Length: 406
Image (cartoon, rainbow, N blue to C red):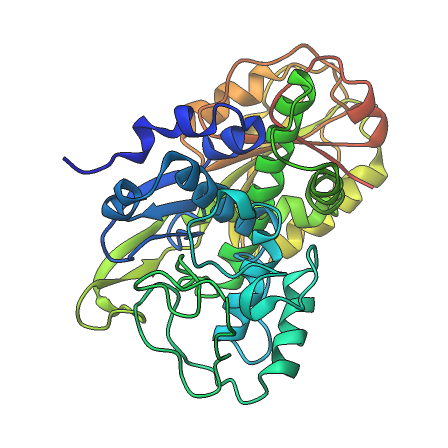
């Protein structure tokens, strides 16, 4: 019977609340196409995946299993999967550099033969540097290293120019070329849109995980140094509301990609079907007509909708305590619209929610001052766009995304 990682996650990460919280938000996929394990972004959904070889996991100890998991999750946290690759693209030095940036923090959990700063070939490499810093050190030490060497974990021999093992250096595991044990093969394959979606999802994942740790007052083995780095780089990152709004629209588009035998798969041509993308999402935009929603808010929002109309179809729904169906219009690509105010009544969020639920939209954006009772649940993802006062002093609390229009 194959090793099912999902059945063992709790046991492996019971003393690691941060990694356990991350793990719950990552899809796990059993595969024997990689010798060991790896993480990446699913190009069709924009969600993170951890793929693992069950035979490999059965062959290592529980401590090493938890080390492999933490190693993969750190690749996500350090944004190795979602940041752009070096100018030369994927290469052996970059693969090694990303591993060095992680392994110094978890050396006692790792299987034998991994790339670790301060050990073996990397005895003169200090601990705690970024992948970019290690990459520059590797380039200086190995100027002949060529792009296009063996992928991590594919069992190939190192190419000419790879670092020669020093006396006393740890021996790489079988099939782990250059002392690496995991696969980075899928990094850099996703398009710019999927990458932006994944980066925003990573921020959400890190935020949720850090909140859980704060409540329990425990981060497990995550050091204070790494904790500060995570909070500063991910959780504390503030994004422009326009970027976040674009992210919201794009997440509605990704789900519409479908397999097509007429589209060539770039990675496996003529073996697997390609993906044909239908990127036109249908988004409902409910605009609160109450007088407390300022004209400047409406103007800024309509300006951004004009730009977003290039990638989505918007159905604009004016409302106060009811939806004014005679005033609803479709904002199509290339159109310009004035931010006219239709009415100035009270506010009831149930009215637009009922309309959107009934008509089957891909997403729902609500422009409002947030001053009305909590609405009923939405059947599609919903985001709230308001000003600073509305975000800081809302009439109701919600777990849905609230964007501050500045």
